[in-house]
Image (tube, rainbow, N blue to C red):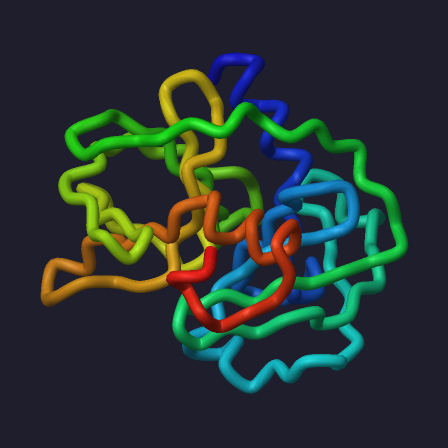
Length: 185
């Protein structure tokens, strides 16, 4: 895997102890914030709740976070910390359907980064894309240049193809203030 993509692996954390058998992606998207999905086992997480996230590459790195925002409309949870992550924001890029992507998830068998490739097959007006791969909720999607596209927030239909929430909707929740009005963003 190209060095540009390997750099993203250090920004993957989990909400589960490294010794547990199932791990969900939590992605660092700026110096003090992380994002994950809010469905299934994450649906019980509440705003204000204190949690610990564990780095995927180095299980000795753990960071205390609090739940900053939960948006059921966008299917995301934003976590905040006073810890400062070594992070540089990618250039914002507008993506279109039928564009290749790289998907970063977690290999559940050995808790290591798992990369797959797919194609954005459809773009929805609500800031979501449909991807050609399956995968896990919380997986992180990058374009062919390593720029952050978004995260997997849902699965669609019987074939479990992924629904991806566009990164600008995640980032703008912090920059423009927290609101559940998607149109305002």
